[in-house]
Amino acid sequence: MDTLVFGTDGWRDIIGDKFTFENVSRASQAYADYLRSQGAKTVVVGHDTRFNGDRFARRAAEVLAANGLKVYLSKGYIPTPALSFAVKHLQAGGGLMLTASHNPPPYHGFKLKGPYGGTATQAIYQAMSEPLPRISYEDVKPFESKRHTIESFDIRHSYYDALTKLVDVKQIEKVQGEIIHEAMGGAGTGWLSGFFQYAKLNKPITDLHSQPDPMFYGVNPEPIHQNLQEAMTYMQDKTQGIVLATDGDADRLGAVLPGGQFFNSHQIFAVLMKVLSQKGVKGKVVKTFTVSRVVERLAAQLGYEVQETPVGFKYIVDAMLEGQVAIGGEESGGIGVAGHIPERDGLANSLLLLEAMAQSGKGMGELFAEIEDAVGWKHAYDRLDLHLSGNELKDAVLQSLKNPPSHIDKRRVESVERLDGIKLNLSGNAWLMFRASGTEPVLRIYCEAASKAEVQQILESANSFVRDVDKVLA
Image 1 (cartoon, rainbow, N blue to C red):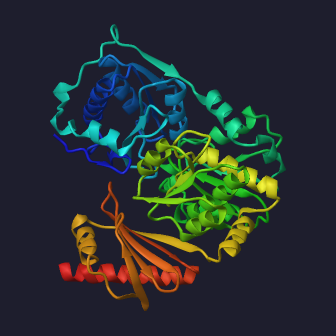
Image 2 (cartoon, rainbow, N blue to C red):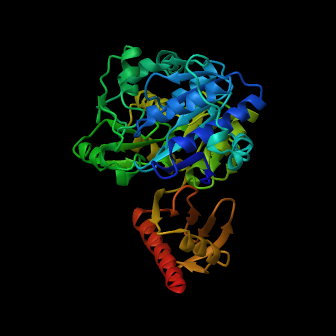
């Protein structure tokens, strides 16, 4: 039997390799066993726009139904935050989202949701996945259409209604310039423009790609600058407006500003924190290990306590479920806010950014520049993803960093943090971090410094360090 590895947010594998109907059935049986052990009676199932997403979701729903659970199956593709909302709205015992989120088109995935309507905690994943190696395909309970039923659902209007309670919707009509949604062919396609229609907004919104696409229009569906070249070109000659870019399942957010400037997740996090502070939202700020120091400094200025977690939104959910969290987020663009579900929501956060623009009469670039000036920290950031042939080099690099060099790019290594991966705090208000992907043979290298040029210099030095390790292996 194949070994199915559950990483920071579920199980992901290549379609037709390990991500097969047989393995989806095994994982669904394990999840059914877990739900029944918790006394759950109902479960909600959805899927994104990936290849065979509807068929994988249907198969998972059949296994869950065969185990005596009442199953709600989405009528079509659905954003992950809308699926999470449906779990809470329908008072289900849990949820299953068939998505590989931001991973490349060949991947599919299996994400769990808790009964509270958000990302499953580490405890849920551990309890569900621990028995999985012992579950064979022969152990999967068979679905019989005469005995078991699956009910379809459409949560769109209820979800939209919840968004109208989170955001001052009518303010959005005051946004200067064009509003564009780049869903990258993913599950958010049509959902933001659908909200504008539902809320009867007298402000148009443009869909950069108006149709779902399992190949995501030729890029990986992660809203980072490497994948948003078309949006950046679209905004090149604009002086106003914004592109709001959501990932493959619409729980993450990036943006593109006039002039084709990419606006990253750290900047979005900071602006959203300022928005919530102005709304009078209390609580603490929870950030993963890879989030900018700007967020820490702004939180201190606004009177928010900061809690830092390992990478993975499930750790932020743990804090949210304990209560009194104003905002929690991660470097990859997943951010959750108070007053909504304990979940990343790229669509909700898009609306909050538009509200900030409307109320201030300013663009995102100007709003973030004001934050930089206020906290005394200039922010530039980038991430280098090294796609390796296997895990040997990845492991060797992390092993080498157990005794890190004294300098990187002529900058002194002032301290080392190991909450998740290895972060080197460098002289000159910069940091560099190495972390292995949990689902791909990828080594991620993160860097923040005062300018783009400095970031690129530091990343190149880090890349040279990796090449040197590779030479030793060879």
